Image 1 (cartoon, rainbow, N blue to C red):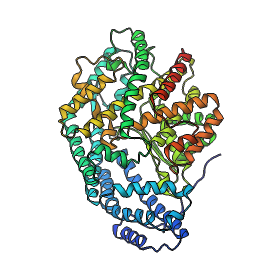
Image 2 (image 1 turned 135 degrees about the vertical axis):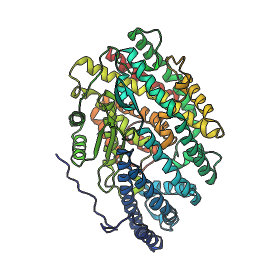
Image 3 (image 1 turned 90 degrees about the vertical axis):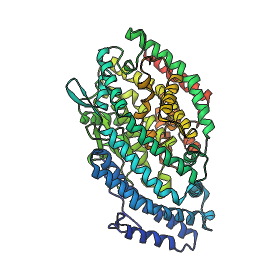
Image 4 (image 1 turned 90 degrees about the horizontal axis):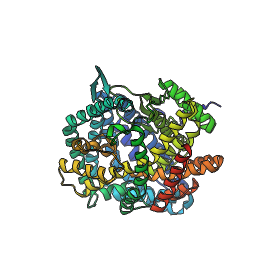
Length: 569
């Protein structure tokens, strides 16, 4: 049944309230600051009003980010996003701090039902503890540098076989059965990154300096510990994460080495080189669609078979023009799902070029969209902002739930098996990638006085530590600068370990799905509906799985994936 949800009607603010006019915005903030709260009921209404205010701001800011990434080579959109952050969001932050305290320190707050408001208190307290007014202008500067990274990367193209290609389009060539052609393409992209590497390194050094000062202002010895608290990682420590790196090395690498040994034998090469890792082993490249319209229609058919609610959501998003799926010059790299709380639907952005990973990406971002949609009626804004360990659980699980329905894109049984195998192998491949990127950032911010050369060397060392059988000989420079293409390091520092934590949870949910599909989907919907109203372990419990990234649990999930791969053989 088609979804006909209309834009959210405001309760506490007029529809023509313009948050882009600072005088008008500040007046409202001052009025909220002066509001008398005479009862627990008044406090609940104030929390809901404050949440509605935040969602109005979030919607406007989200659209500015969307426009900026859709046209990353257009300076006007970047300026509009930067101006909104600098002249609206940044000057609002002292008021947000006061309003957070107004709620948290109110005498009636403790009278509110703990089942409903207990977790809110924990979140507000954390935000109050790390806020420093002197960090506001630094945040403005950091946001400007983040925008610059997307602008710089979006303009990168190479000349290949007489045609101008984006770096994303070059991924297609890495699947070509002609090894020399793959190598040529890989080296061409690497040469482009080496050519521009100095600019990216300098940009990052500016970011690093700002981030270190932000942490220092907040009373932290280093940025790593600051951001750990800023992300609200209440349930595990930085030391736990480092131990997770060790577990990945001990448990996942042996499995990947086995997989890569088979790859080497099937390709009949002496050693696996970086340009050998994406090519199809049978020499036949999976081509799931030729146009993004086919990507959309095929995905909707998959969701219809999985659960009709999911199909209806994506169809409605398409109807409302809330999808931007195809790759083009000038578009920012990557993919994301953006919340639009007043529109009451999310927005999906990605760069599809017609390969199987595009299907994976769209299914992944669709999982985020189902998560966002399930929280649309929540009245407390803080509960809609789920941490990454929960947000990525929704998206990664969807990649696995849909494995049995890939016949919507592939009609040949061998193609279906290949697509499943690629997805299952990717669930393991992601672990060392995450460990490398996360470990690099630990080193960067615990050793802040390093040079760019030392940083590249450290990345190369980590690539060696977590190497599952790839020969990088003669490619030392290319190996060292590989981190420059990881946008998270630039744009959302330390947001990466969550992918590995969530991947474990997603594998567990998929295991449950294989045993009891209906129960798994019910649990999936149940945890998504909670938003962030509970702790992360409680949300995982609602999903029917454990919040656990111990070596033993990792081994159990890796064994399950390897067994699934064996079945495909």
